[in-house]
Length: 590
Ligand SMILES: Nc1ncnc2c1ncn2[C@@H]1O[C@H](COP(=O)(O)OP(=O)(O)OP(=O)(O)O)[C@@H](O)[C@H]1O
Image (tube, rainbow, N blue to C red; front, side):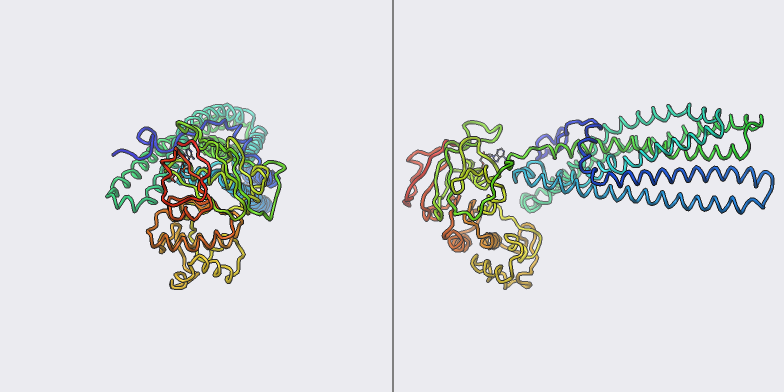
């Protein structure tokens, strides 16, 4: 079964992200760790203190054997026993506090990083998410953010604490018996080499697995979003097949990574047994020579066991670094996607705005767009309250022009001005407060109708919302719904018709009450009756507001003060039987 997504037949719907060395990833994510760095340091100190408590505890255990068990002197038990218990409780408290502190800092890091990534996505053109596949983006913001945390926050603390723990236990072991400790130390390179061996290979496999996970999310999201189409075209099996195929690719990738990840701990156990046997062999010899007490040997064995714990942690961190490295690459790729629109450092915050809107020889093209530039030499000057209808064949750049007018994009050539000021000299907030865009696809949230309307002006009173809904000719159908304004609607306006959704969006625009409007095909996809019901409130909304009206509806366009025709147009292509009062501009088109 062939796939819809380009490239998916070869390597899944999600392209690999550029490789980033762990050191670089660490440096890049540090700004989100920094606010909690002191807490991470305190947590690491607490964990090291906990390890110190464990060393003392083992030392007391040695004394217990040498001073109570071997000489069979019960009277010494209580003092040593109490000291051991006290130390164990103290060490447990320290370890808990350190562990919880590290976790808290880690969770706060996740929160900060995810929020920053979403904030960055909001600076990108609205279609970026669509092009990047929403499911994959969600996977990066959830699974990958958590994996990165394991490297740069909790991993950092655990690594430091494990390193100090290793030092403490090694020092104690050296102090107890030099030959035994040397044997134990000789095995260390084996552990190190195996950590590197497994860590590197795991990184490669995790890269594939993370990308595949993004692919599954992307395909599931797309497939379910288009469920209606799939059923209409009887393609449910094909959709299930796509999800299954991506799922299988993810399963294979996960299993390939799991083979290494699951092999590693038992492999380490074998190494530990080997090292343990070497120590016991040499220890028995030392015991026979009388150089070491039985308590000393048992304490050494206990130290060895303790020693393995941080060694284990360090080598597991090498594996975690593999997973986190792959996730870091995917997140950095997202964060490094540049925003085409940047606010200038000295941008001016202006309000109120009269509403004069003009384009001066504006030119724009998307990178890689074939043929002539999409928009070239577009000029118009709208006085406050004037209406410009923008017409032209599909794909000639009408929606692109709308994006330039609300500054989702900046022109390559020329200027877009509001009240005579280049949009690039204004803060983005000023522009958005002055211009409302009604996009082609009505955007609704999974929330109540009231909340969806009030989104235009949070804090609006119920009376204001109802006034806006009445002006948009939406109040009537809203109050007929069982829960009225409190009726929950879905993301795609579940429960409502296309025209009703459009009227909710118009009510929202009424609430915003900006002096400039950009309406992108407000009647697209509606039948004549529904379109009429939308046009009437739209006219009310446009009254007194500078409006750019993108439409294919000739009758509606005829009501405008001027018409701008985009695309290849000669006189013969403007045969609208209506009489546009003036025809402005004629752009080279797609
Ligand atoms: N983000 C993008 N990157 C690259 N090309 C794009 C992008 N968005 C749109 N295009 C291309 O630019 C051209 C103009 O698109 P636009 O949506 O502005 O056309 P339109 O006139 O509004 O079409 P329609 O009337 O069908 O809505 C199309 O060829 C489209 O494929």
